[in-house]
Image 1 (tube, rainbow, N blue to C red):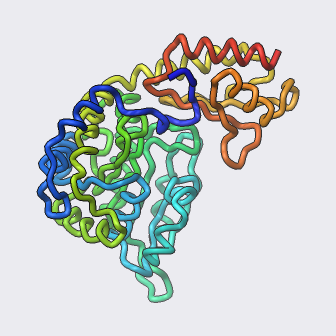
Image 2 (cartoon, one colour):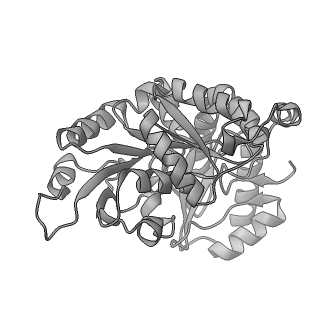
Amino acid sequence: MNVIDLRSDTVTHPTAEMRSAMAKATVGDDVYGEDPTVNRLETEAAEMFGMEAGLLVTSGTQGNLIALLTHAPRGSEVIAGDKAHIILYEQAGMSALGGIMPRTLPVQEDGTLLLDEIEQAIRGDNEHFPRTKLISLENTQGTVGSVPLSPEYTRQVADLAHNHHLPLHIDGARIFNAATAYNVSPAEIIAGADSMTFCLSKGLGAPVGSILLGKKEFIKEAHRARKVLGGGMRQAGILASAGLIAIHKMSQRLHEDHANALYLSEMLKDVPGVRVMSQHTSFVFFWLEETAKLSPLEFSTIMREHNILLSPYPGFERKFRAVLHYWITRERIDAVITAMKTVLR
């Protein structure tokens, strides 16, 4: 690609190996459970994360909503972070479609929810209150910079939840980045969780799809929720074949994105009018200072003329997010820095 696109890790196209696998994929009708490639992806993803079963869904938002609908009946309550994707960016699906009430807690700078605040938020048995039915975490926590949560913290939250007879769900859209950051296996990074979603396209290069994982009975019920949301697919093995390459091969190169993100953050410190805010995993957040030569809109427009795509972060005019992925090499980072110095000098 001639364009250097730093807006997200969802912008990538499937690799040549993925395209070849998609063209040759053995397929069947997945609604009947007869697509062998889908079945293989679901089974191998579950084994990788130490779960009993998996379900291919069209997106992470759909996977999270299916999990919420399966765990929590109408009129119940889910505890989640106030900056969680399911709260900010999923159009209140749990309430609109599930009649579920969110109870939000402050997300800390390290991406965690405070354990004592989680415990205090769990409702007692009182007919005036909605029943707490689920605790949800996000790993990595995207809105505070794609901060990875540690296996130890996740286990603490899982133990707290289970002590109150509650399940723990993890929105693990970029869970492989968290596992890479802590140098642990996928199973270790989510140990203790009862369900989890992860994205096949965010950082992994697949064209579409997410996986929902959990116990066999949970996934059996999740099939019903997927169906009512219109998520039943037919010859989905074409997509699943790319997903298999994503989980087995593309997940093994994420350390490159993390190293490149660190490199970018260091190089940005020499760009006039730019202040680096944070760098975690494959994310770099930076601020375009008031003293900068250009406004955020002018900066984005002129950078596009240099074939570089950067956009202000939603809700923050001067805050920019750069996300590293397999298209972004050191040479391309150098090109970005050169262009930024040119336009902001």
